[in-house]
Image 1 (tube, rainbow, N blue to C red):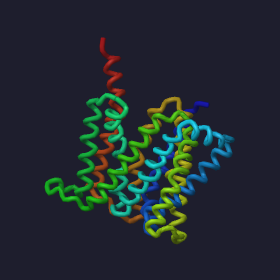
Image 2 (cartoon, helix red, strand yellow):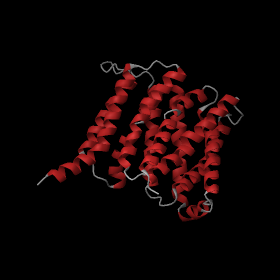
Image 3 (cartoon, rainbow, N blue to C red):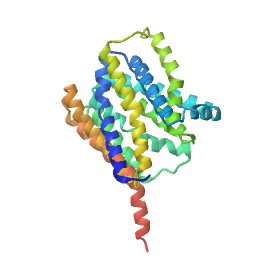
Image 4 (cartoon, rainbow, N blue to C red):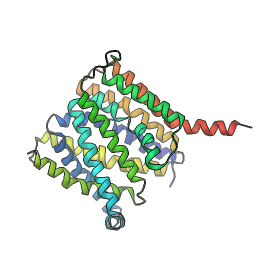
Length: 302
Protein backbone atom coordinates (compact mmCIF):
# COMPACT_ATOMS: atom_id res chain seq x y z
CA UNK A 1 0.00 0.00 0.00
CA UNK A 2 1.12 3.55 -0.74
CA UNK A 3 2.17 5.46 2.36
CA UNK A 4 4.39 8.51 1.90
CA UNK A 5 5.26 8.81 5.59
CA UNK A 6 6.40 5.19 5.74
CA UNK A 7 8.31 5.65 2.48
CA UNK A 8 10.22 8.62 3.92
CA UNK A 9 11.01 6.71 7.12
CA UNK A 10 12.34 3.71 5.18
CA UNK A 11 14.26 5.98 2.81
CA UNK A 12 15.85 7.94 5.65
CA UNK A 13 16.86 4.69 7.34
CA UNK A 14 18.45 3.45 4.11
CA UNK A 15 20.36 6.70 3.55
CA UNK A 16 21.55 6.71 7.16
CA UNK A 17 22.87 3.16 6.84
CA UNK A 18 24.53 3.87 3.49
CA UNK A 19 26.24 6.92 4.98
CA UNK A 20 28.06 4.68 7.49
CA UNK A 21 29.60 2.29 4.98
CA UNK A 22 32.55 4.48 3.92
CA UNK A 23 33.70 4.31 7.54
CA UNK A 24 33.04 0.56 7.62
CA UNK A 25 35.06 0.08 4.40
CA UNK A 26 38.08 1.86 5.82
CA UNK A 27 37.95 0.13 9.21
CA UNK A 28 37.55 -3.30 7.61
CA UNK A 29 40.42 -2.71 5.18
CA UNK A 30 42.79 -2.22 8.11
CA UNK A 31 42.30 -5.94 8.85
CA UNK A 32 41.88 -7.47 5.39
CA UNK A 33 42.59 -6.92 1.70
CA UNK A 34 40.01 -5.50 -0.74
CA UNK A 35 39.40 -8.95 -2.26
CA UNK A 36 38.93 -10.56 1.17
CA UNK A 37 36.50 -7.81 2.20
CA UNK A 38 34.53 -8.33 -0.99
CA UNK A 39 34.42 -12.11 -0.55
CA UNK A 40 33.14 -12.09 3.03
CA UNK A 41 30.77 -9.17 2.41
CA UNK A 42 29.32 -10.88 -0.67
CA UNK A 43 28.73 -14.09 1.28
CA UNK A 44 26.86 -12.24 4.02
CA UNK A 45 24.81 -10.28 1.48
CA UNK A 46 23.91 -13.44 -0.47
CA UNK A 47 22.80 -15.17 2.73
CA UNK A 48 20.67 -12.16 3.74
CA UNK A 49 19.03 -11.89 0.30
CA UNK A 50 18.36 -15.64 0.27
CA UNK A 51 16.69 -15.32 3.67
CA UNK A 52 14.53 -12.44 2.47
CA UNK A 53 13.36 -14.34 -0.63
CA UNK A 54 12.74 -17.49 1.42
CA UNK A 55 10.68 -15.53 3.97
CA UNK A 56 8.64 -14.03 1.13
CA UNK A 57 8.18 -17.43 -0.52
CA UNK A 58 9.86 -16.25 -3.71
CA UNK A 59 13.02 -18.38 -3.94
CA UNK A 60 11.59 -20.03 -7.04
CA UNK A 61 12.13 -16.75 -8.88
CA UNK A 62 15.86 -17.49 -9.00
CA UNK A 63 15.41 -20.41 -11.38
CA UNK A 64 12.73 -18.63 -13.45
CA UNK A 65 14.78 -15.47 -13.95
CA UNK A 66 18.05 -17.33 -14.57
CA UNK A 67 16.50 -19.49 -17.29
CA UNK A 68 15.01 -16.42 -18.95
CA UNK A 69 18.20 -14.33 -19.32
CA UNK A 70 21.35 -16.11 -18.05
CA UNK A 71 23.71 -13.94 -20.13
CA UNK A 72 22.30 -10.78 -18.57
CA UNK A 73 22.96 -12.03 -15.03
CA UNK A 74 26.48 -13.13 -15.92
CA UNK A 75 27.24 -9.62 -17.19
CA UNK A 76 25.54 -8.05 -14.17
CA UNK A 77 27.43 -10.25 -11.70
CA UNK A 78 30.80 -9.52 -13.32
CA UNK A 79 30.12 -5.79 -13.14
CA UNK A 80 28.56 -5.79 -9.66
CA UNK A 81 29.69 -6.90 -7.17
CA UNK A 82 32.87 -8.30 -8.76
CA UNK A 83 34.50 -5.44 -10.71
CA UNK A 84 32.71 -2.54 -9.02
CA UNK A 85 33.49 -3.38 -5.42
CA UNK A 86 36.96 -4.76 -6.16
CA UNK A 87 37.99 -1.41 -7.65
CA UNK A 88 36.05 0.62 -5.08
CA UNK A 89 37.65 -1.17 -2.13
CA UNK A 90 41.07 -0.83 -3.77
CA UNK A 91 40.41 2.93 -4.02
CA UNK A 92 39.45 3.10 -0.34
CA UNK A 93 42.64 1.16 0.47
CA UNK A 94 44.70 3.96 -1.14
CA UNK A 95 42.73 7.13 -0.44
CA UNK A 96 41.38 8.87 2.65
CA UNK A 97 37.77 7.78 3.13
CA UNK A 98 36.53 11.35 2.66
CA UNK A 99 38.03 11.50 -0.83
CA UNK A 100 36.95 8.04 -1.97
CA UNK A 101 33.33 8.48 -0.88
CA UNK A 102 33.07 11.92 -2.51
CA UNK A 103 34.47 10.67 -5.83
CA UNK A 104 32.10 7.71 -5.76
CA UNK A 105 29.08 10.04 -5.92
CA UNK A 106 29.96 11.03 -9.49
CA UNK A 107 28.55 7.74 -10.82
CA UNK A 108 25.12 9.27 -11.46
CA UNK A 109 26.71 11.95 -13.66
CA UNK A 110 28.64 9.35 -15.64
CA UNK A 111 25.51 7.23 -16.00
CA UNK A 112 23.66 10.11 -17.66
CA UNK A 113 26.55 10.57 -20.11
CA UNK A 114 26.83 6.85 -20.94
CA UNK A 115 23.07 6.62 -21.46
CA UNK A 116 23.43 8.80 -24.57
CA UNK A 117 25.44 6.33 -26.73
CA UNK A 118 24.35 3.12 -24.98
CA UNK A 119 20.62 3.72 -24.46
CA UNK A 120 19.99 6.26 -27.21
CA UNK A 121 19.01 9.01 -24.78
CA UNK A 122 19.39 12.67 -25.69
CA UNK A 123 22.18 14.72 -24.12
CA UNK A 124 20.55 17.65 -22.35
CA UNK A 125 22.06 20.99 -21.42
CA UNK A 126 21.72 20.37 -17.68
CA UNK A 127 23.56 17.04 -18.07
CA UNK A 128 26.56 18.91 -19.49
CA UNK A 129 26.44 21.55 -16.75
CA UNK A 130 26.12 18.84 -14.08
CA UNK A 131 29.10 16.96 -15.54
CA UNK A 132 31.21 20.14 -15.67
CA UNK A 133 30.50 20.95 -12.02
CA UNK A 134 30.92 17.39 -10.78
CA UNK A 135 34.22 16.72 -12.50
CA UNK A 136 35.54 20.11 -11.46
CA UNK A 137 34.75 18.88 -7.95
CA UNK A 138 36.75 15.73 -8.69
CA UNK A 139 39.80 17.82 -9.66
CA UNK A 140 39.43 19.94 -6.50
CA UNK A 141 39.37 16.82 -4.31
CA UNK A 142 42.12 14.98 -6.16
CA UNK A 143 44.53 17.95 -6.08
CA UNK A 144 43.74 18.95 -2.50
CA UNK A 145 42.43 22.26 -3.84
CA UNK A 146 45.70 23.20 -5.59
CA UNK A 147 44.19 23.77 -9.04
CA UNK A 148 47.13 25.76 -10.39
CA UNK A 149 49.72 23.04 -9.86
CA UNK A 150 47.35 20.15 -10.75
CA UNK A 151 49.43 17.71 -8.69
CA UNK A 152 47.37 14.67 -7.78
CA UNK A 153 48.14 13.31 -4.31
CA UNK A 154 47.28 9.71 -5.27
CA UNK A 155 46.49 9.36 -8.98
CA UNK A 156 46.13 5.56 -8.78
CA UNK A 157 43.57 5.82 -5.98
CA UNK A 158 41.64 8.56 -7.79
CA UNK A 159 41.73 6.53 -11.02
CA UNK A 160 40.37 3.45 -9.23
CA UNK A 161 37.58 5.48 -7.60
CA UNK A 162 36.52 6.89 -10.98
CA UNK A 163 36.86 3.48 -12.65
CA UNK A 164 34.48 2.04 -10.06
CA UNK A 165 31.86 4.60 -11.13
CA UNK A 166 32.20 3.34 -14.70
CA UNK A 167 31.53 -0.26 -13.62
CA UNK A 168 28.57 0.84 -11.47
CA UNK A 169 27.07 2.89 -14.31
CA UNK A 170 27.47 0.00 -16.76
CA UNK A 171 25.78 -2.29 -14.26
CA UNK A 172 22.72 -0.04 -14.14
CA UNK A 173 22.64 0.17 -17.93
CA UNK A 174 22.69 -3.63 -18.13
CA UNK A 175 19.95 -3.69 -15.49
CA UNK A 176 17.59 -1.67 -17.70
CA UNK A 177 17.04 -4.88 -19.67
CA UNK A 178 16.05 -6.86 -16.56
CA UNK A 179 12.30 -7.01 -15.98
CA UNK A 180 12.46 -9.54 -13.15
CA UNK A 181 12.21 -9.18 -9.38
CA UNK A 182 15.07 -6.86 -8.30
CA UNK A 183 15.91 -8.77 -5.09
CA UNK A 184 16.18 -12.06 -6.97
CA UNK A 185 18.22 -10.38 -9.71
CA UNK A 186 20.65 -8.93 -7.16
CA UNK A 187 21.06 -12.33 -5.50
CA UNK A 188 21.80 -13.94 -8.88
CA UNK A 189 24.52 -11.32 -9.44
CA UNK A 190 26.12 -12.26 -6.13
CA UNK A 191 25.93 -15.98 -6.88
CA UNK A 192 27.75 -15.34 -10.18
CA UNK A 193 30.39 -13.12 -8.57
CA UNK A 194 31.30 -15.10 -5.45
CA UNK A 195 33.28 -17.85 -7.29
CA UNK A 196 35.15 -15.16 -9.27
CA UNK A 197 36.04 -13.30 -6.07
CA UNK A 198 37.19 -16.56 -4.45
CA UNK A 199 39.45 -17.25 -7.45
CA UNK A 200 41.05 -13.80 -7.09
CA UNK A 201 41.68 -14.45 -3.40
CA UNK A 202 43.16 -17.88 -4.22
CA UNK A 203 45.40 -16.40 -6.91
CA UNK A 204 46.68 -13.73 -4.52
CA UNK A 205 47.14 -16.15 -1.61
CA UNK A 206 44.38 -14.36 0.33
CA UNK A 207 41.95 -17.25 0.71
CA UNK A 208 42.56 -17.33 4.45
CA UNK A 209 40.54 -16.40 7.52
CA UNK A 210 41.20 -12.75 8.44
CA UNK A 211 41.04 -11.36 12.01
CA UNK A 212 37.60 -11.36 13.59
CA UNK A 213 37.43 -7.56 13.42
CA UNK A 214 37.67 -7.74 9.64
CA UNK A 215 34.98 -10.42 9.46
CA UNK A 216 32.62 -8.32 11.57
CA UNK A 217 33.28 -5.34 9.31
CA UNK A 218 32.66 -7.45 6.20
CA UNK A 219 29.37 -8.71 7.64
CA UNK A 220 28.31 -5.12 8.27
CA UNK A 221 29.28 -4.08 4.74
CA UNK A 222 27.46 -7.06 3.22
CA UNK A 223 24.27 -6.38 5.15
CA UNK A 224 24.09 -2.60 5.12
CA UNK A 225 25.83 -1.66 1.87
CA UNK A 226 24.94 -4.53 -0.44
CA UNK A 227 21.94 -6.39 0.97
CA UNK A 228 19.32 -5.28 3.46
CA UNK A 229 19.64 -1.57 2.75
CA UNK A 230 18.88 -2.22 -0.91
CA UNK A 231 15.64 -3.92 0.14
CA UNK A 232 14.82 -0.99 2.47
CA UNK A 233 15.27 1.51 -0.37
CA UNK A 234 13.24 -0.63 -2.76
CA UNK A 235 10.43 -0.85 -0.19
CA UNK A 236 10.56 2.93 0.25
CA UNK A 237 10.25 3.51 -3.50
CA UNK A 238 7.30 1.12 -3.73
CA UNK A 239 5.52 2.79 -0.77
CA UNK A 240 6.02 6.36 -2.01
CA UNK A 241 3.17 8.35 -3.47
CA UNK A 242 5.72 10.99 -4.57
CA UNK A 243 9.28 9.84 -5.35
CA UNK A 244 10.86 13.32 -5.64
CA UNK A 245 11.05 14.00 -1.85
CA UNK A 246 12.41 10.49 -1.38
CA UNK A 247 15.08 10.97 -4.04
CA UNK A 248 16.14 14.22 -2.38
CA UNK A 249 17.12 12.27 0.75
CA UNK A 250 20.12 10.98 -1.19
CA UNK A 251 21.75 14.42 -0.92
CA UNK A 252 22.03 13.95 2.85
CA UNK A 253 24.21 10.89 2.38
CA UNK A 254 27.61 12.38 1.53
CA UNK A 255 27.50 14.92 4.36
CA UNK A 256 26.34 12.36 6.92
CA UNK A 257 29.15 10.15 5.66
CA UNK A 258 31.71 12.89 6.31
CA UNK A 259 30.41 13.18 9.89
CA UNK A 260 30.92 9.45 10.51
CA UNK A 261 34.35 9.53 8.83
CA UNK A 262 35.44 12.41 11.05
CA UNK A 263 33.92 10.90 14.19
CA UNK A 264 35.05 7.27 13.90
CA UNK A 265 38.13 7.42 11.65
CA UNK A 266 39.52 10.64 13.05
CA UNK A 267 40.07 12.15 9.60
CA UNK A 268 40.20 15.94 9.59
CA UNK A 269 37.81 16.92 6.83
CA UNK A 270 39.75 19.08 4.36
CA UNK A 271 38.26 22.24 2.91
CA UNK A 272 39.11 20.89 -0.55
CA UNK A 273 36.95 17.83 0.16
CA UNK A 274 34.02 20.01 1.26
CA UNK A 275 34.41 22.31 -1.75
CA UNK A 276 34.75 19.45 -4.22
CA UNK A 277 31.88 17.50 -2.69
CA UNK A 278 29.76 20.67 -2.77
CA UNK A 279 30.37 20.97 -6.53
CA UNK A 280 29.50 17.30 -7.04
CA UNK A 281 26.26 17.60 -5.06
CA UNK A 282 25.26 20.78 -6.92
CA UNK A 283 25.89 18.90 -10.16
CA UNK A 284 23.69 16.02 -8.97
CA UNK A 285 20.96 18.48 -7.94
CA UNK A 286 21.01 20.16 -11.36
CA UNK A 287 20.82 16.78 -13.05
CA UNK A 288 17.81 15.79 -10.96
CA UNK A 289 15.99 19.14 -11.09
CA UNK A 290 16.63 19.85 -14.77
CA UNK A 291 13.65 17.82 -16.07
CA UNK A 292 11.33 19.50 -13.53
CA UNK A 293 12.45 22.98 -14.64
CA UNK A 294 11.84 21.97 -18.24
CA UNK A 295 8.31 20.80 -17.45
CA UNK A 296 7.58 23.97 -15.49
CA UNK A 297 8.79 26.15 -18.37
CA UNK A 298 6.65 24.20 -20.81
CA UNK A 299 3.61 24.60 -18.53
CA UNK A 300 4.19 28.33 -18.08
CA UNK A 301 4.30 29.04 -21.81
CA UNK A 302 1.01 30.38 -23.24
